Amino acid sequence: MVKVRMRILIVGGGYVGLYTALRLQRQLKRELSSGDIEIVVVSPDPYMTYQPFLPEAAAGSISPRHVVVPLRRVLNHCKVVIGEATEINHTKRVATLTTLATAEEGSHAEQLSYDELVLAPGSISRTLPVPGLADFGIGFKTVEEAIGLRNHVIEQMDIASSTRDPAIRDAALTFVFVGGGYAGVEALGELEDMARYTARYYHNVKPEDMKWILVEASDRILPEVGEEMGRYTVTELRRRNIDVRLHTRLESCADRVAVLSDGARFPTRTLVWTAGVKPHPILAATDLPLNERGRLKCTPELSVEGVSHAWAAGDAAAVPDITAREPGKETAPNAQHAVRQARTLGDNIVRSLRGQPLEAYAHKYVGSVASLGLHKGVAHVYGRKLKGYPAWFMHRVYHLSRVPTFNRKARVLAEWTLAGLFKREIVSLGSLEHPRAEFELAAGGKAPEDPKGSS
Image (cartoon, rainbow, N blue to C red):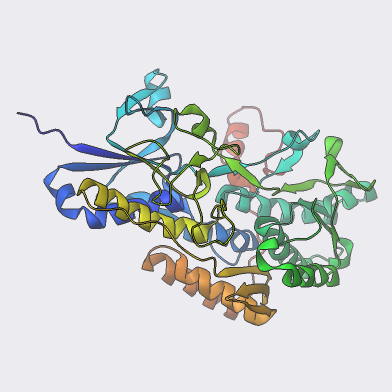
């Protein structure tokens, strides 16, 4: 007789996907070795991105390859499939996948059956129907976007340095960031810090020539660090000649002109959109219950509400916060909860398989830290408020302790140490976005319109 293996399908290779798979392969080591259980991780990328390090990667403080964790290396007892789930029929326990091979084979998709499902696809950028945003906007959610933005900023300084047209120069040196959350503020702080340092190597570009603008629709930025630290952040950014505009929205960015709701107009070649996230579209292609925001309804034990053999956590899940005083409050969709939820989720799957009682997820939010550039930051942790160098140091220590694997910890620490001893790298490698452009031109092909990758 052929032995049928139980299959645990994990959709997503981010925080929840990686940490859940790690937990499962440790807890189910014997079952995996005997072939009784198989863990399959489906992810569009062969790595997990540690997103809190994206601003430092954009600023050149950390190499891009050290911001990511290779899934195949750390999940050596799991089967990693590079692809995406396009539909999930949990009633039949079948997921429809597209992989790199399906296009080559000429097939549309393949069916994968499973016994236990973990949905952790994360989130995508939440955009609005702003004219010109799809044509000229730049995201900041992946390592490719972070490095592309770094190359882009340096290229704009090159354009400003070599042009005699004041309109082109002004647009090249104007950088607009939309969204005052973690991603927007940290990306702006790190890149402004990098550009100010880079300007010393240009004979005709000075830091005061650049315009850095932060647009936020609400009345404050960085709400996670508290109102007082949010006000301090605004003051600190404005002290660095960064134009912070609260109660302001982006109305249009058509024709490379950022039009704001307060009437201001800024010709710019750089518009970075970090105005929030929304659940991954795969959630709408399932037969699982969703709440009004499109997230999976979950129990405190991280199982999908009203459904057996389905689990979720992280950005995709609406998990009740049993530590909150307000009834009906959900845990915040951030990395602090995602990592801890993944551990509880992995343990509960093992308990479920062994017929043991499940454990409810409970974690009281301890606070937040944010970097505003080299040696600058804000923090609100365990009720204590820090700013400046102490907050920046706490930011680095905390995230160094949280990045997965000792290998990555050692590499990041080594890079930070070397960065303190040597000067910053200010090289733009925009040509990496079109690696075949030069050869295509030499072979008689048509050169791309933008060979350096600048937008």
